[in-house]
Length: 165
Image (cartoon, rainbow, N blue to C red):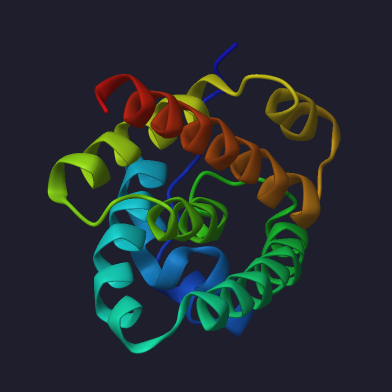
């Protein structure tokens, strides 16, 4: 069931605390419409900047650190607003989508497919993502439901790759 539309946050909130800046995806979550999609687009664009400069192992370490940072930042920002999963919080889309991109062939078509699948699974929240979304109201729960969406996306991509050869 869709939630009531949440009020978009502004620049004042974004720069009031480093956790707000991180939770809001460096500002990419401040859009009035589809902040999760814009956060995922931000992830796609930024991935292209840092990916060539790190090994797979280094990137996995960075993703673990970014995931933990997200739990902290979303906890802080959520407590400030009194809303643990405000729509402007998009760090939970960014880090899991970076993981998806790490394991996706580096072509536009595969990455676009990964983007569409990730958005689909993030929006529909198949179990256990729905459980985290509905019952774990903190930074861990917010980050976890998108990690599940990333897992479903990777499974769907693997199936597509198998079927297409």
